[in-house]
Image 1: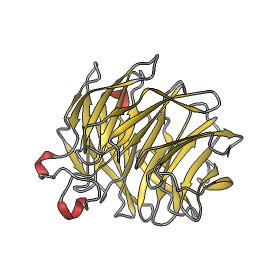
Image 2 (image 1 turned 180 degrees about the horizontal axis):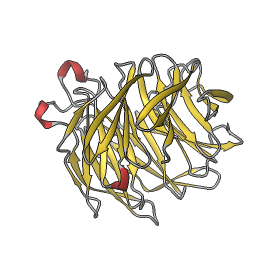
Image 3 (image 1 turned 135 degrees about the vertical axis):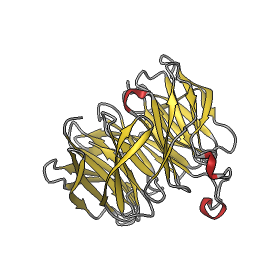
Length: 342
């Protein structure tokens, strides 16, 4: 990261995306783009200054927006309607020519071609209950969809025309009742990690770089065990029952730590990642914005920006190993739940 970077934040409650500039350890809000009903996910093509935002409505859709890096404003360019339900997670292939989406409410995943910023009709569709995230491999040869409802990761070969072909086996199990949610891969691409919503763990899967297949290897606790949180179950109100409510997952700089958020106690913590990919439980937690569904780390790992669904503000931190030094709190909007650096 340079001395200056942009940070985009989706405010689902306001139907907007806020654009901030991070410079010299301070956030400055540049613009707020409205008219993005229920936006809670977007993917950024930084090379082309394009943002693909999932929006709700009748029908839901994916909006392509042009980013002005000076003003921070986003300008709509095109739209793909999604009559079967909106996206909860969007991810671009590294070359920006393909867009993958996962729909929690619709229970389906899609792969779409992208040409000159226009998202084409899906060329492949898969179905699993409560899909919560999707991620392509760095070489764009494979794609992985996480199903919270079925406790699994679905794995596919991804062709040049963006079609999905199931691997053998098509799915890899997560622990029963764990509620797998968000997935990330390490820089070497030989491991994938999944945060669970109900058990509050990070699952470690080894990854065969040739076949693309995942194998479950282990897990580590990612929630604050001193808070006596109960194991959650599908459909339960985690706040009413004081249950675990895992949310977001991101690598820190160097890949030696995996940061995660937990919403019932509103904490951020870091699981340690060993050289062999194995994990050690989080030992230190920072209380942050209320109900932190989304956060992000700067590319150099020096800063973390956290948003809260029950807050209208962001918190900016300096990252010091597994500890966070609070720097600033700034206004963003209602229901902030998705954060990305540009």
